[in-house]
Image (cartoon, rainbow, N blue to C red; front, side):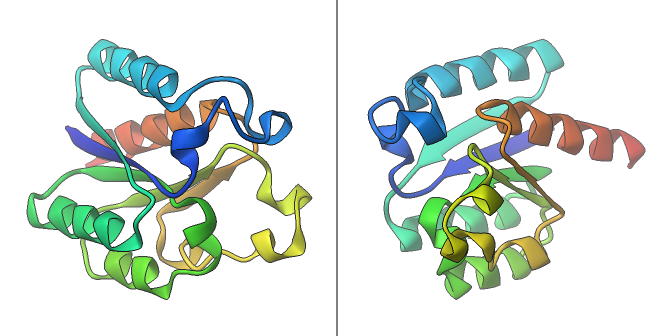
Length: 146
């Protein structure tokens, strides 16, 4: 199984920004933990981060073109603003699980709306960095069901 983990804007600042909301771990630490999990579960995981909407869209398209089995997506603020990312997800046949480290529904009102949720296979929010492993577990289970 091949899975892509995409992190959007400002997630490269993990460990430095809003530690109350996001914790103290860095993106590099998170990616290392996810790589270890992927090795244990015997699947291929590629992690990428960009602050640029178009680059995220290109990677989503590429995942579809290459027939990946899943995408774990933390689109950051683009979750609440990007019709373009929503449309990119709709244009591929790859299940996407939307994740958020913080519980967006306990935060500012503008964070309560997701353009991605209606086209995602699911959404996991509010469990810190564990949202990524929970999403990977969901993709693994879905893949086993065939």
